[in-house]
Amino acid sequence: MTNSYSQVIAIDGPSGSGKSTMAKKLASQLNLLFIDTGAMFRALGYFADKAGVEFKEGPELKNFLNSLEIQYSDNAEELIIINGENLSKVIREHHVSTHASVISQIPSVRSFLLDFQRKLGAENICVMEGRDIGTVVFPDAFCKIFITASPEVRAKRRLDQLKENNPDSNETLEQVLEDVVERDRKDTQREVAPLKVADGATVVDTSEMKASEVLNHLIEIAREKAKGHNIDL
Ligand code: DC
Image (tube, rainbow, N blue to C red):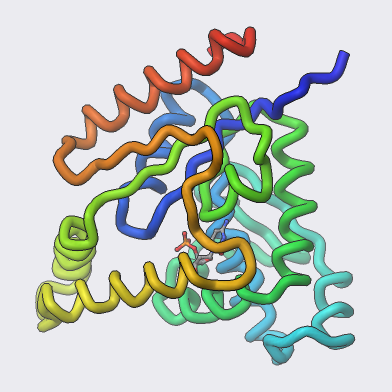
């Protein structure tokens, strides 16, 4: 018998909303595979840059994509391996964010990763996190959650993180807030797979919530949705 829904908990939202941390914790609590789709865009951006491939549609990019063999696991040490090269650490470097952001706008790259993500999601009950999981990748996911927070709260969180990583950083809240607003504008207005709340998604605004409250709320939402779909969580 085939299901009329996918056994995926789709989690989307803007950066700094706490979505990645929360999605990972949710997967761990429910004992499900965690799929970080941002890591895939990062890995492709890094790999394409290293190979000197131009970030635009054309035969060069097509050949490049055809030459890739991607392995994904939710073991942080071996999160993502492309053609035998373990990229799990390097993808977190700051400059890789820029490559990821540019390459994620290219339709053939999105379509390449879409196939990969759908295959992974079809093989496992999982928590998949990104920007377009509930809207494009698995619009039929049994559970869709959109995690957000106000731009001010996200800027404050980002600044705290920057200061933690580099106590000498002289970045101000105003600058970080400007970045957050600009990133939101780009993410929501881009032509391909713009960031938006998927039909049927539950919106969770974490601005005024503690991490433990968010996690409990997510578990509650996922279990409630699972009940309605005869999924055992
Ligand atoms: O979530 P992140 O910062 O690791 O994502 C890296 C980049 O990839 C970011 O520019 C947004 C993009 N991305 C996307 O376009 N679609 C996804 N499903 C996940 C990430």
